[in-house]
Image (cartoon, rainbow, N blue to C red):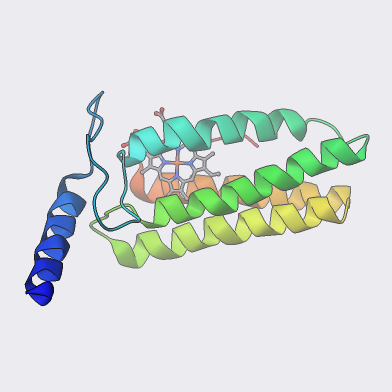
Amino acid sequence: MRHRQAAAVLAAGGLFGTVAFVGGDEIPEKAPQKLPTAVVNTHELMEIFSEPLYEHLKADMAKEPADKKAWSHIKHHGIEAAEIANLIAIRETDDAAKWDPLARDAQQSGLDLARAAASQDWPKTQAAYQSLIKNCNDCHQAFGKDKAPELEP
Ligand code: HEC
């Protein structure tokens, strides 16, 4: 009996998993039993999480940080990028063999940026930033067709 209930819950979780990609203003009413489950589609993930990250980071990278707090902002954006890569990684895709390594590269780039900023090394931080943006663009070229932007560092 216990076993059967567990199986039913799993089946429901699987079902929710397939319908979790909503568009427009549709917000799911119930969180599925099993997380992680994507809440929005890739377009909205990028608009809500990646775009603000990009804008804040670009502004912070405009000049060398003058104090600890400014370095710390950049470090936090690196960590943010690395964590968002987890959200990217759980999206459903029809080409996981290409998508998964790009998501992993995004996490690596975020970690590299965070570490460079933590060491307060400006040339290293600039290089890590360039490489993070290149990684965004690599995936946009591979998967975005005409929908994903070519981002300027
Ligand atoms: C593994 C793939 C992948 C990575 C990595 C990725 N993106 Fe995207 N991004 C996409 C795809 C696919 C789209 C197009 C989504 C759509 O509109 O269908 C997109 C779209 C966007 C958009 C346009 C959103 C809109 O409102 O039209 C922005 C902005 C964006 N990405 C920012 C970023 C930034 C910044 C990074 C890196 C820090 C990044 N993305 C990394 C796949 C990726």
